[in-house]
Image 1: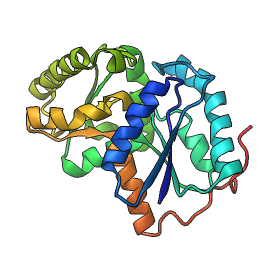
Image 2: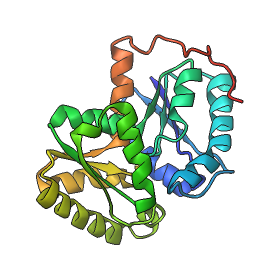
Image 3: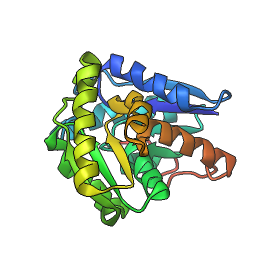
Length: 233
């Protein structure tokens, strides 16, 4: 299986970190190709960054999936699921958002979950996605750790400590059965935090890879988007 992973922001170092997390989660016979646009914001923090990322994301998707081809699934590696529904409608292959994947996984391991994300500006976007996907009633709270996205690359230890503190507050106040990490840059923290809190801490990157592989195994990837792989305007 060949999975295309697109990081919608333009920070190549984050793409490499996300790629490493995806490879660690994938089966040995699954190939991962990770790319990012060069003409989008360096981090997607809130709706304005998400909107600014769309043209570059769509051009890259067209170049890789429509023109080049050869992929069995595509993962959009931004927890805001930037451009996801547009891409689903147009794509000849399954397109999975890491936010959508993580929400599905959280509802499978428990009744309630909370999300710990980066900045407060991202909270309304995530809450809107939860409502659109039908998961709002299962989510106790979307919490902002106030860790900037790029700090996850430049200050991993400090970021982890701050995120862990927010998880501890969530466990005390929200009483969730699982925690969802609300940023692709948090992917490498999931195992450490799961062990620390003895609670499922779910990373959307690994979950999206597993779901893509499951779709292939179930032959559920044999479909075509409603636009038949049309180029995105």
